[in-house]
Length: 202
Image (spheres, rainbow, N blue to C red):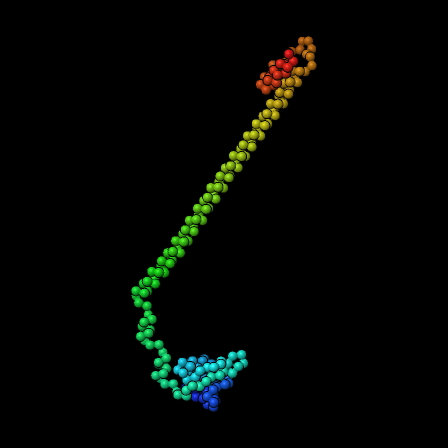
């Protein structure tokens, strides 16, 4: 395959340099685009040719033909990686074990980090819940205090009204003869006011 392409390139390149459409030359040699690319790579790797310019964007492919010698089976086998190299590239059981341990340690570190983050989030959530409960309790206490103050204010207003009524009764018009004397003032607040007024009159 590569030899057919090399022969075709040499045939259409009298000066030792191919300058044209590589696809046409490959088709004349019976190669499709995939086989042509493989053949070009093999010819480059074996030093038969050197690609000076690749045919892209309408440009011609320029190839310098350095050797017309056909590629042998030995040349192709020499390009393959050796079996010894393949054996050396294989992982030993020790290397595999080390890789597994390192991976497990990495996963353990990630898991520990995630666990720490979860603990931090849980602690923060607990703190916020406790703070919310404290605020709710303070709000309830404030509401209870407000209710208590309202009750006391209402009681004070009622006591004041009773005191005013008692004062009106105490300093009202003179009683006609035979009218019963007013009942003594029983409200403590009104009694204190009356005592003050009486002391001022004397």
